[in-house]
Length: 138
Image (tube, rainbow, N blue to C red; front, side, top):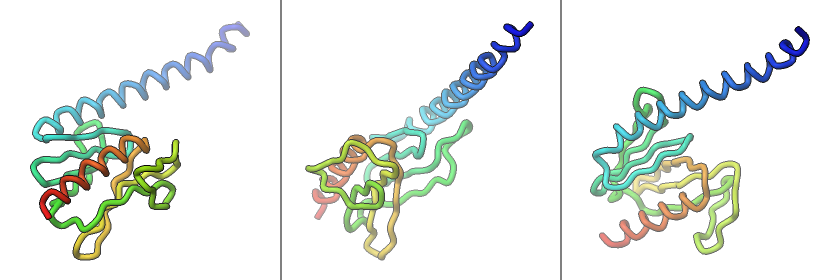
């Protein structure tokens, strides 16, 4: 009986892991349905983002569909910065990691939009791509 009680916490951990995995799988499937209409898109645990023509839509991933969706046009963007731990980073000298990674869009009207990322290289790739897209229209 003692051995059975010893294995109980391990069983609980496996159940928790299975439930967390199923939850993440449902979020990923909802993202796939949402991302169908975009030219380019990204998914991570903090945010989903999609680009269609010059419109960027982004929001928080959930099991049903992304929530808190916001959309803005690249024509309204003055500058794009990659920030890691609230410090603007040079795209040629990327840090290995950081706790808070954001792609910051400075809009012409003075507002800022911060889209969170989990990985510095993915955020840098998006920053370069979108900066080129903005520069190509000016």
